[in-house]
Length: 372
Image (cartoon, rainbow, N blue to C red; front, top):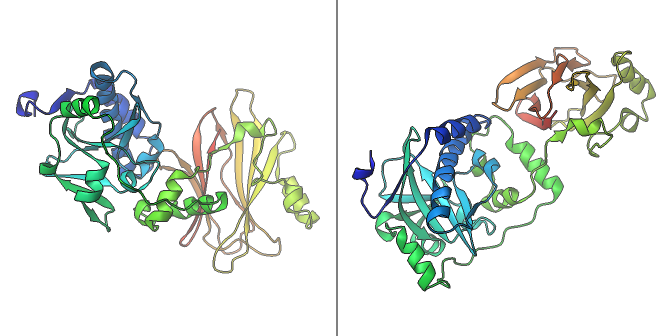
């Protein structure tokens, strides 16, 4: 499609090769295929539409920083004075209906005033805004699909000409664009961490539909646990969830001593343990990280897993893995019939390198995101 195929009332913008390349590169850091595609579409959309908007109508317009949410939800928000524009990009050539994820409608902190339907060429070479509507119209005139958690509205109920939006804003700045939204519950830090851990299970293919919407919406607005900054450990800045060997094993001095003997005597190590509770009456296990500063600026890291009682073995087939941001399993090891520990090969981590530690047992999954 080229610009002459687009109705003159619709906005058509060409996407530069630089934006295409940058969007594709940035999208590769997402774990799921859906997340990578969402990130690519939204980055292309925002990087092309926002400069046009700033040049033509609203120099003060800014994008809200929410790229992490593209792992789960399609769409991007732009702040415009007291109003919010929600861009919903789609590669589908069918424009009879406009589909908006429920998160952009029913999460109070996410809800916008105007919702723009954006068609993006599958190769990312161009985009067009083929219509817009308001939060109030989507909520009151649209249809809701509880399975897909999507609001839809017929294109005939939308305004095709985007310039109308700017005229309306000038003539009727107090136009009613939003309708009432039911408040969501507040989650504690512990609930937030537990729910995110639950959603890391690889068998869950659609995290946004795994929980009741009220809980899912509240989770998205809660502070997701930040990655463990391992370089801060070198400055003795360590979160309380990672404890010293003496704190965890104070009542088991013989086991604490054996843990200490694992380290190389010629290394100045920082060692911390996290207790992982396993389901189905299994004893907890200890995840241990050992860090050492390298002369080249990297951090040497060893990751090990132990039973919490030295009289027992690790559960058979419990797995310990190192996963890159691309989702690739870099290392993995599984416990055999009578293993009292398993460990990954020691590796050196350059500064600002992100990775995930994963412990799995049957349907149970524990993950810890780290940055070196």
